[in-house]
Amino acid sequence: MNGNGHSAFDVETAVRERYDRGARQREESLCCPVTYDDRLLEVIPKEVIERDYGCGDPSRDLHQGEVVLDLGSGAGKICFIAAQIVGPSGRVIGVDVNEEMLAVAKQGRAVVAERLGYDNVEFRRARIQDLRTGLDAVDSYLAERPIRSAADLARFEAYGAALRESQPLVADGSIDVVVSNCVLNLVRDEDKRQLFGEIFRILRRGGRAVISDIVADEPVPDHLKRDPELWSGCIAGALDERRFLTAFAEAGFHGIEILKRDEKPWRTVEGIEFRSVTVRAFKGKQGACWDHNQAVIYRGPWSEVKDDDGHTLVRGVAMAVCEKTFHLYTREPYAADIIPVEPRVPVEAAQAKPFDCSRDAIRHPQETKGLEYRATTEAAGSCCEPGSSC
Image (spheres, rainbow, N blue to C red):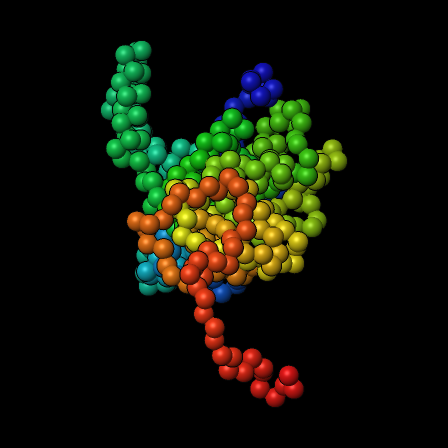
């Protein structure tokens, strides 16, 4: 038994062997029914589509010109869909550990590029929980310097550390959107925290993760986690729904929301329901808090709501926020529910004071208007709609 109560079988080996078979011929048991835009499938080779194993479509949240990374890209279907959405001004990177799947994807890349008239997709080999380490580089090192002693191992470990530091496979803050389609559940439980941390690391500030995956409606018991077929079949490694969302928050994300949740479970095992969800989460709430006399008004309909930093917004009340939070609230996913209130006279950065984001406070109107504001004005034109009787 290992520290998580699992048997001694190797999760990564079980997953690799299952997906090696899936690369050679289609395995229906690895799929959830997903509807894609048929127009985006026209340029994708049949061999790629037949070997697609997913549970959602995170590509629906992509935009033109973005740099996208697909975690566990498999045969490349989502990458080739994304390539068309982001267009020639965008770029798509697929990352997978399975060499047979990558071979299918790389063959498909040339076909898709020819049909589109541009090539904006590339594939890289790595474990998705370690996006610093390129496995092709590791293999090249080991081919020239096989490990035959403890000293060789020490030199290899030093090489790996230097490689991750000086030549990471995916650099910090280099990606606009990270997508994934039914892959996070295949990662060992003990590596999941690192996995979410890697997603956060590679995203630029303001970037987002859009993840489709299988989740459970209650925690998966240890005896199911000891089943290699259930691990490689997207069941045993599934997080329960609450833990899945919490993992994003613990990694530093904000604005976490469920874009899609299948009503009907994909599978039920011993009464536990396993279903597909698609979650979106944003990076960018970190940083200093400065007071620029800004406020936000929550439109409703709830009487009050709380964000991922613990700020409570009360419906219809101008709540004080720092400049960083103010700008977060004026973008996705908050903007539609928020009325921003700027001060009448902008506060210059040099005059801004530190803001205590640990407390909730109502912004007094005189703070935004100015303490000396005593204006009296005439009516500013008609406030009635044309044709109304007010």
